[in-house]
Image (cartoon, rainbow, N blue to C red; front, side, top):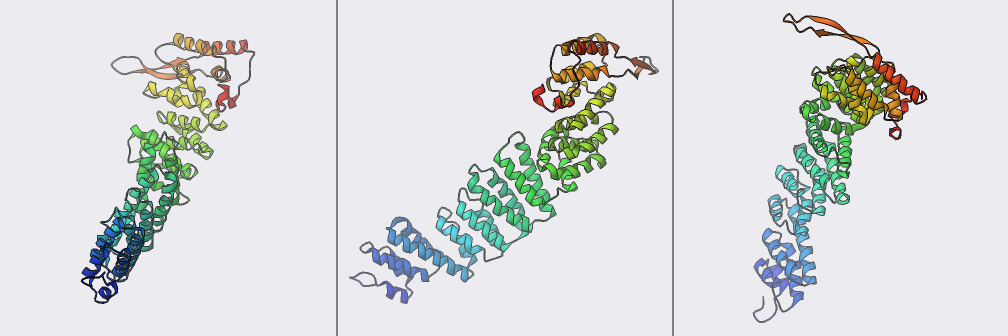
Length: 449
């Protein structure tokens, strides 16, 4: 460098005088000197040089900024070619500088080492750094390693939940590409559980996030949902969250029917069987009707209500007829210990009539007078559904059951239960209405209510 004149950048470069070039980069009198210095520093790749170039990139004019940017890119490329992995990772401390992080993210894709993989994993969690995240994901895809799949799954859930769906949807798809290519059965279980838990949290929300979750899950699982996966998932939760579990699993729709049927039929735990039946109802897939009907005809106690509820939700004609015949064919068939739960199974089919209907067809200590009063109330509701219920009440047969006589020996006697008075009220009301026909479609078409 001349004592009295401007710095001789070329001479400093030849002599590899990095300190002189750094000073030339700060020479305030001539911007062209600073441009030349920035260009020359590209031949000396190190973190210290990048530190100086960043300063000029931030504070100088456009020409110097352009030269500094180009030199930074060249230095990162040279560090990559020199396999200076540690230096590249150190440069990621400039997380606020997109230029550096973007180039480093691209460069690290050339090294399949543990420290580079985890440096890239750290980058994909950068907040609102879309281009950097994309570059890091592309590098991870290029490396291809199964050890980071769980981290990718965690990050995928974050991308899916972002508000800027149109931007993060691309990142979600790219992340799924990597997961799909390298995941194993253990990863599938982990991912499915994580996503299903999120679906449970969204179980009442028809949101775009819900759709993206289901799409990602289906991509991961392929054409089938494994029985072992649904079984393992359903056994993770207690009955208090059965509805949410059922709705989440039902997101698979057609894919879930066969494995859920298998669980419902074969699982030794009756609670898991109930969860599977509930989930089948949530799928609303007609292919589930036949196995649910068979199960209803052959089941006892509390299971009947879960099965009836599932069939009602599907709303198929044969399902409706099956439930009606089962309820009215023998009212005591639907008996369970907790009386308060009975209207729930009828609600999807009968709506506001459910509790009223349960009172009418139940033989409770409140007596026939109470049942008659409820039936008289039903007669005041002039709709096709109430007409259908009246038709069914007309066909309710008399029955009998064993009841305790209340002595210490615990003796039981057979008690006859007749529905003559109920049938009489129902027939008289139908006659007043002009004997309209029974229409099973009324339960499916809510306009008839």
